[in-house]
Image (cartoon, rainbow, N blue to C red; front, side):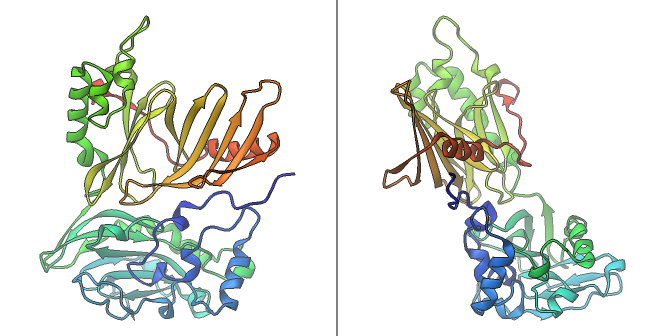
Length: 403
C-alpha cells in the first residue's frame, strides 16, 4: 500500500519567503506545503487556533523590515485611489480599474503597494490578492515573489521591482472551493494592474529589466560556443566548467555536431521571475549544463554527462545517475533563488543487478544516504511524480549554431 508521506514541496512555499511587506510574513507562508492528502482548510484552521495573524493583515506586517532606503519599513497605511484609480506609495504607483472601486483596500508603505479584497479582509480572512514592492536586495525575490523589472527611484537608487502573491487561501477557509466573485475579479485584473506600474516623478521603471536570459547570459553563450568549437579534448571543456559531452559526441563511428545537436534555452525554472539557462541535447532533452543568475550575474550550477545528466519537470531539476550495471538513481531537487544550490527533495533508486528480482528504494535524506526498500507500486508512484510533465514551464532548446 502506498505510503502517504510528504512528497513534494510546492516551489512557492518551500523557497525563500521573507517579505518585502506584510503579504508574505504569516507563519503559514513559511512552512512546506502539506502532504498529498492534507487540505488547505486544515492548514488555515490550525493557523487560527495557534493565534497566527491572518495572511495579509496589518498585524502580520514585520516590525523591522528593510525599507528601500535601507532603514526600517514605514507602517502600512490605507491609501485611497485618486479619481483615475491611481495608487502611489511615493516611489511608484499602480492604477486600478474604475469598475472595481469599492471592492478593494490598498495598503502602502515606502516599499509596497498591496491590494486586498475588502469584504474578505473586513471579515478577518486576510483578503490579500496581489502586491508590488521594491527592494535593493537580491535575496528578497523567490517563493511567492517574482521579479518583473527594475526601477531607479527619485533618490537615484536602483531597485528590483517584484510582484507578490498569496501562498494560501485568503477568503473563508470553510468555503475553500467558493472563491468570492469580488476576489476573482481583482485576481483576474492582476496582470493588467501590474502593467500600469510607473515610477513616481523623478524616477524611471523598465518592465522586464534584469529578468531576460538573452541579457543575462548572452556574452556567456558566445564564449561557451567558442570554447566548444575549439576544444581539443573533453578535459579542456571540464576545466572550463562545461560538460565533456560536447567534445565526446564529435568522436567515434557516428560523430555529431554540437552546434546542431546541442541547444540552449532561457527559462525560469525556479519561478523567481528571472531566467535561468539550460544547455543540453535537443533530441533527448538531457541537460548537461545549468546556469542561473546570482546577484545579477551568470553563475554555473551543475554539469553532467551521458551517465549523469539532468531533466527539468514542473520547475524541479531531476538528476539521473547511472551508478553501475543495472543501478539507476534519480534525485529530485529545486534550484534555490539567487543561488547555485540544488535543494534536495527526495530520490528513488532502481537496482536491476539481479534481473529476475529488481529492487526499489526511496530516500528522504539523501545526504545521510538513508534508503528504504519499497514495492514496485510505490516506486512507480514516486517516479510518476518526478516525471509528470504538466508544468506551465515550456521551453525549446535552440541549436548553439543559431544563437
